[in-house]
Length: 283
Image (cartoon, rainbow, N blue to C red):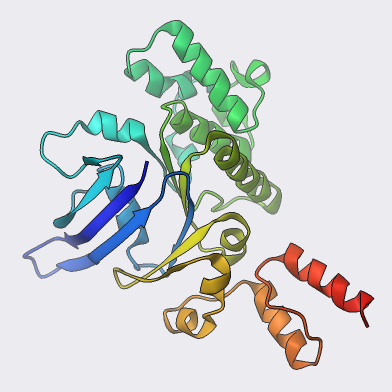
């Protein structure tokens, strides 16, 4: 189910002294089942872009076509769009409000008018998908959980709507390293198991490098690069000029090369480790 973005422009507070063009003629295609990393400095337009994907924002001009349906057209069902595209905001646990984990995850499916059996099935499946034990947690207050568990419950609530596209805005923001690794691991597993189209917004170059198939780089409301993580991170000067950086391990490998330790360019810690082992064994 491809996502096609055609000449998308969004202007905030149009025709006022505060007018600001957040998106400027953006055109993109995200293929069915693709895992996309969306990066850009603060104010680059990435958050504005993802809010168009489930019609939280309407474009000033342009079109978004998902599975052959123009979601910017008049008369399109917002309910159907938001079932198709699940959007997980930063700090989604702040949106938890029910008295039990079960009720929170079941909230969306209940609003679809599904049967009790189908709701039960969706809650169980969604909690399983994010690595939580249904029997152990279904009657627990979500506010008694750890930060990482709360976030996974919030993501489960979106998954219970069975979206075809999952958009996550900085899903690891504010988590400790353990919680961050758990969330990223579950997102990777979700993509592999469910074959979802995933769009991950992140400031962490390391997270992006390890997870995604393709990176989209935004600056000043435009797409400036779109390519594989390796090809994007090989353009360090371009990234530097728009206020971004490459993964720290890439810097380390560059410094090692300067000192005569010749190993190939690396974009992840695992890759650098393997290359260093090869180098040490051959020297």
